[in-house]
Structures are given as C-alpha cells and as structure tokens.
Amino acid sequence: MTSRLRKARAGAGVIGVLALAGCASAPDSREPRNLQLAKEEVRAYVAGGGYARDVAAVAAEARTWLERRVTRGGSRLAVVFDVDETLLSNLPSMEMLDFGYIPAEWNRWVEQAKAPALEPVRALFRRARELGVETLVITGRRETERDATARNLAAVGCGDFAVLVCRPDSDRGGAADFKAATRARLAAEGRVIVANIGDQESDLTGGHAERAFKLPGPFYLIR
Image (cartoon, rainbow, N blue to C red):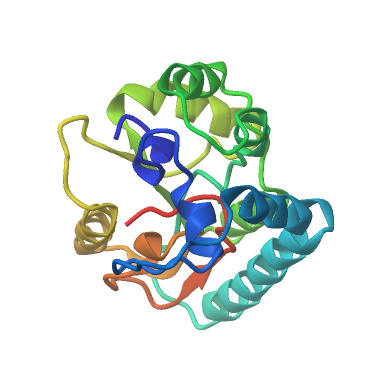
C-alpha cells in the first residue's frame, strides 16, 4: 500500500467495518450484515464515547506497566508506538469519506500533517520520555510519507522519537512480518522493548516486546 489505509481497504470497501460486523473470512453463502448498519455501529461507538473510553483504558494500563517496569531498572528501555489510530487519529478523514478510501484524498490528508493526536496515547508517549525511555515509532506508512508523518508527530508533541521506521515503498509483504522484523532489529541493537502499543493485531504479533497493548481498532483491518 502507499499508506496505512490503502492496505486496510480493497478499493473503496471498508474491510475493518465488515470485520466488526462479524463477517467470516471463509466463503459464506449467507447474506452478510448490511454495510451501512455496520458503519452506523462504528459511528455510534465513537459518538457515544465508547471508543474514547476504551483507548483511555488501554493507555492507562500501558502507563501503569511502564512506570512499574522502569523501577526495575535496565539500560536502553524502549516503547514501540504505531502511528495511525495510535499516536494519530485519522477519524476526520475517514468520516469525511464515509469510511471509504480514495488514494488522492488520503495522500492529501497525510501531506497536510493535521491529524490530531489520540490524546491518551500521546500522554503515554510523553510519559515515556519523562522516564527516560526511548520511543520507537514503527508505521505501515510508506517512506514517501516519512516527512509528512514526522511533521505531524512533531505538531502534536511527539516529535522527539528516537527512531521512525516507515515501510519501504517496494515492500509488498505482510504488515505483521514487517513490524516484527523491525522490532527484532531494534532489539538487536541493544534496546529492551518493554511495551508495544498499536490498534491492529499485526502491530503486535511476532514478539520482541515484553508486553503488548491492543487499542480498539474498529475502522479497518491490516494483516
């Protein structure tokens, strides 16, 4: 994909919303749940405050773990953060497009570097820095989006990361493999990754972190 959302959707479909609605990945001859109803459920989850509460709960759990872990000591402790729907929220863009995907619109959104912070995760990032823990950012966004991503992170107060790793433009493998391999490489450089936080299972699978923290991810699905 040329962006995280491109990988998340095929054409203008909303894979994550379909997954939320309970559609199985195996072939099924039954009529699936109506897509519009599934999208309405996602909107209600956001508008009713459930999404914000769940994000805050996960971030609080991660913060408690991080603060306890730091007291145990160790050198080059680090936390891995995903970008989209983790440090940054793309909800304004997704809602504008009715949870669809238009490449030109996504590229314009990224280039504007105006995505707001997902505040509880931003606070966790800042707490990690206060504790002297390295912050490692690993994103499915492509190298061509690096500059805009760095500008956006700086704009929300998360620009003092130790590392920002974007997917190579030529990489056509799975996101889970890319992220696991990146964590392995960063750990091999001497870091101890004590926590890994993201909204997709593919952000977290593959190990190379003491603890993984899964944020809610109802908007799309990345494997």
